[in-house]
Image (cartoon, rainbow, N blue to C red; front, side):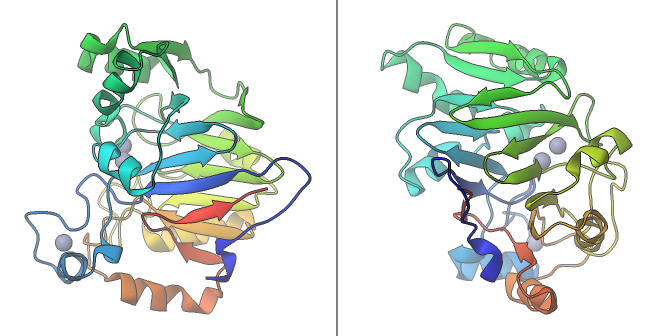
Amino acid sequence: MSGAEHTAGHTAGHSLVFLGTGASCGVPSFYCGCKACEEARDDPRAARDCSDLLVVGAQHTLIDAAPELRTQLIRERVGHIDRLLLTHEHFDHIGGIPQLEFLVRLGPRPPLPLYAGAQTLAAVERCFGFMSDVLEPHLLEAFATVEFDGVVYTPLPAAHSEGAFGFLIETAQKVAYFPDTGPLPPQTRERLDGLDVLIIDATFNGRNWMPSSHHTIDEAIALAHGLGVRHTYLTHLTMHYDEPITRAELEEKLGPYGGDIGLAFDGLRLTLG
Ligand SMILES: [Zn+2]
Ligand SMILES: [Zn+2]
Ligand SMILES: [Zn+2]
């Protein structure tokens, strides 16, 4: 798609690797025989792991750790992770953290820096206490920027679980990554002026089963238009609720947008400059 490549700038190149682009049930869901799941069984390119994103520069910064993290990293030939940022505490975003245990223990390497909000850090400690010597926790506060490897990250409140964030990711370009959110809080929305790329929750198709904490595909498109974003990628897709839609059908639906609204998929890479 024409919006898939972005090149800019004078700074060292960065890129985004979409490791997973599905919701927590994945595509296909083992228990589902809808046309979207059948399409993904027949064609692995239509399959979706749970959502997480790798920011690649001189270093590798991982945003969220899907339960399928190990196979995602093998698929993308990623041999190291320098730090982990988390959006929120739900299993589809933290379930892969134990896959990082032996990256540290068998290196041996220093503990892996972990950046997250207070609720998310507490959940990680509760769920993965056996890794407390392997992770080096750092508290992220909403709107307080951190910078790694030439990229500025700003955690912004999402409308999702308590303390959930999306991230503003700024290089030569301005990217927003909100894999899980309902209607954006006003103070978050006003930080998204002038976005080059929006990567946004499009969990549902048709009826929104959870309107305060997720978007439908149509709501995500409306948000992109409201923000006047140049390029938008839909992610965190169930593809089967409330109305199943195949990847082929969704690409056809997005066709009239001429690449301005694109469909994220597992393995998609964007060059940011
Ligand atoms: Zn999620
Ligand atoms: Zn299905
Ligand atoms: Zn969630």
